[in-house]
Structure formats: structure tokens, C-alpha cells
Image (cartoon, rainbow over the protein chains, first blue to last red):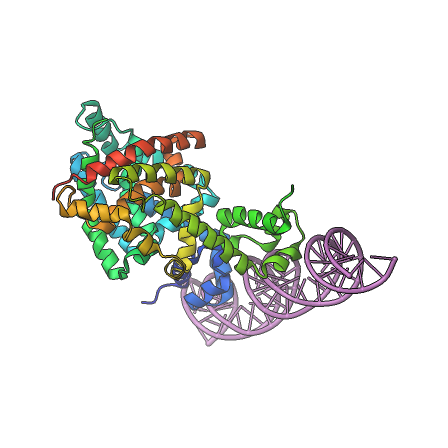
Length: 202
Length: 202
DNA sequence: CTAAGAATTAAACATCTGATTAAACAAACT
DNA sequence: AGTTTGTTTAATCAGATGTTTAATTCTTAG
């Protein structure tokens, strides 16, 4: 069955907003991409801004949830959580490589979005994963790296290659397939690298 | 002495393009921010696109040069180069925190820019720094991490916190001053972390 | 079947936007 | 002085852009 008009608009808008941003995407582009009449965008979503907000919030949720999935599973070890995270998140980003840049650009013009709508702080900083981390630091099994630095490192190792992909592709002349293959390798390596950092003695 | 009209336009455009992107910045915004008549933008720079290209290339140069400065100094050791890089680059990004997002957004819509205009590959991948790296790997002093993964890790640890700053600030409720203080700490830590990763045995 | 409601369309609208023009003004030169 | 060259200004233009309207077509409940 064909997707509904409403869904066709959303799909087209997702693609275009993701690639070209809010101002770079024109209502007529959305209509053309969705194969619908221009007026239907306003009929179903009232305004371009409203459509953008809806899509933005959905993406932000999947971006944050994509990180946090598995972080509150009390049955897994710290190492298992890192392995699970790297796997799941690199899969997500391989399917939606423009997601981080889209989110960060939107947050630049409206930093309050993430504070208001989502319990990011609670979801991540008070997660079982971070509890395990701080316990291990307290027990001196890990180097005393402040939690926020640790989180920056973990996310940076995972997300940054996708944000700077054009840059890295220019540096190494690799195809997108080869790039994706590298990201698969990182699934295995990131847990090792993170583990090594946690052994650092001050 | 007052900056020239041409320079006033450039300064205003730099600020606005950086914060709001190309389409988000209107020619009338630039004129107002620069305190000049609307027509002068076209008089000095012919078109908004041309002005953007000029600014973009300047920023891209400082972004890439900012990385590569010190990478070809044959008198310094590998460790010294990493320490120098972390220091210099975090200083640069503290002064221009929106630079990476600006560059990456522009590269998304025009990935060829970086290939055409700048010898990134040569500047980084064939640098003295990377030679030292591959030699150390060959001599089994470092773990056999492919150079591109190593570069992704090094840049990711440095640049990603600036790109995702709104995200991290929401997570930890810190002020911009506190964030900058954390970045200063990373100057010291990143060399240690990178070093630890290079000890990983497969 | 048919009337009411929902969905779709082409056209129009008001405003915005990048760029140009012609005139006014200023500075430098002879 | 007057002339030329470069700079600035207000007004204007043509096209783009987000949204609305009124008419038309499609669906569906009675």
C-alpha cells in the first residue's frame, strides 16, 4: 500500500531538512520531493516551521535514545554496555549519517530544545552505565577521569567520524562503502581504546 | 582607525554565516550588522555567494592549517607534536567554537571544496608526524592501528566536544566558562589518552 | 444513490530577498 | 577652482517564498 500523503510529506521533509537544513529547504522542494501539491504541506502540518519541529524532535529522540539504549540494563557489565553501545550506535549512524550534523545545527540555533524536551541528563548521567563507571573509579579500577570527559571521549570516538566524513574521505580517497567498512571496524576497536584510556595513571 | 567598509562587511558576514549558515543569513542582516548600506555588499563582493565562498575558504584554511601547524616540524618528537597540536588547536577552537560546525555544514553541501582547494591529504597524511607514526607502528612500538583510525581518534577527541557543546552543556548544567575550563584540562589529557590507545595489543 | 465531509488542486497573495540603478556625495588629482 | 574617480545612498526590480483561498475531486456514511 502507498504511504499516506501525510507520511509522504514527512519522508520528503526528513530527507531535505537533513541534507539542506531548515532555511535551505523550500516548501516547493518538499512538495516536489513528496510528489504532492504545495498546499498540502500547510493542510497537514500548518507551517514549515511546525513540520520542522515535529521532525526535529523525532530525530533528537532517536539520537538520544540511540545512545542511551542499553545504558540502563542492570544485567550487563560495564564492558558489555560499551560493546553494545558501539555496535548499536554505529549501525544507527551508518543508516542515518547526517543525523548528528542535523541535530547539532538545530541545537546551535536553539540550544534550549534539548534541555526542555528530553531528560538527557537523567537518561545518561544518572544511568546504570554511569553508576558502574563512577563506582569503578571510586574503587580505583579506572583512572580518575571526570565522567563528562569520559562521555566526551566515548561519543567523540563514535560520532565524530560521521560528522567529518567529507573531510576524512578527502584525506584518504576512500569510497563511502570503504568508509562504512571502517566504521564496522570501529565497533570492535572503540571498546579496546576506551578501555586503554581508563587504565591511564595520572 | 575605523576598519574599512570592506572589512566591516567581512566581519559582519563572518559572524552571521558562522552562527546562521548561508541561507539563514540575509543580505539585509549583513548590512545591518555591518552598519552599512545594503548595496555596498554587492559593490565590494559582487554577490552573497561570492562573499560566502571567500569567507569559507579563509576559515577552511585556518581550520586545516590549525591542525597541521607543527605536524611538519622535523625537530620535534611524536609526543611533542601531539602535545603541541592539542594545545594550539584547543586554543583555536576556544576562540572560534562554531568553526567546526560551520566547516562541516559547508562541506556537506559541497564536499568537493576541500579536495579542490586545499592539499589536505598531503598536508596531513604525508606529514612528518604521520611518518613518525607509521615508523613507530612498523617498529612495533605502537599498536597496529591504521593511520586513518588514529587520525579520527585524535581529531575526534579534540574537536567533537566543541561541535556537541550544547548537548554536553545540557547534560551537565555547566556554564560556558566551565566548559572552556574543561577544554583546558583536555589539553593535558588528550596526549595521555592517545598514548594509552597506542599501547593496545590486538 | 446522494449528501456531507475530507482531500486535492491551481491560482493568487503578501512579503521577503538578492541584486541593480541612477543619483548624490566625497576624495584625489591637474 | 574644476574634473575625474571612487564611494555611498535611497529607490526600485524581478523573482522567490510561505501561506491562503476558492473551487474541484474523491470518500464514505446514511
